[in-house]
Image (tube, rainbow, N blue to C red; front, side, top):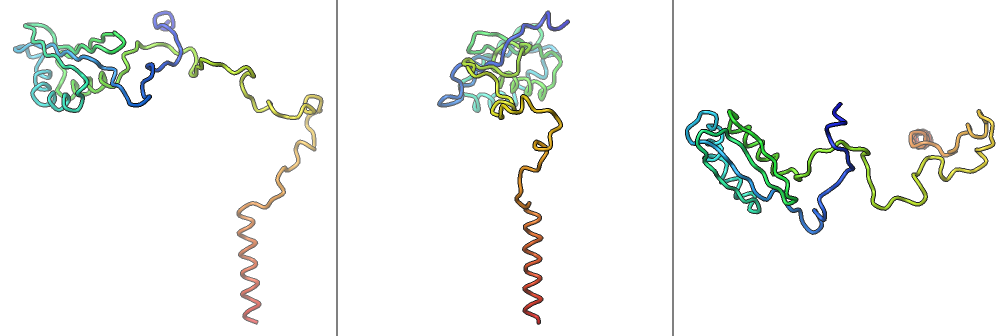
Amino acid sequence: MSHHIIPSGFVRTVLQNGVGRHICQLQRLTLKFCKSTVGSKGMRDFIENNLLDFTRKNPGVVVYLQPRRHRTARLVAEYLNGDVHQQYVNNFSEEEIHEWVKLLRSQSGQKAVRLRKYWHTDNPSIQGIWTPMTNRDTELNIKAFPDKSLSAKLLEESTASEKLLQKAAELRSKASQSEN
């Protein structure tokens, strides 16, 4: 049933992000809280203890404080692409609000979509998708399976373990000859 509700799309990234430097997509963060209600206590504690550290670490994010009387505490995040996300944090602890702020800062601002494919390219190959049979000999098309020529061992080289055993045997034979 969720495939009717969640829109579908392809894997996308924010345009040109990471070319030259990373650009934080969070543009503005608004903390709305009440100065007196118990539900906003975690928000008030976050403002007192963690907000200055957050603003120092993220100078590109504008932070607004809006005290609203008798309203529930919430975080409003505005992103560079114009999307606005609201997260109600009423009765949340200071640590939970800190985690939500970190999550909002690290998101791209794009809405959640159900992926049609886990890969996407703007310039698909003319040759088509590579398969293990792409560059194989065409004689395989007319062979009757099982075929002994196809089941033969391909490499006649000795393995690394066999080479080590041969060298150990040579060293033993040299040691026994030097003793005699």
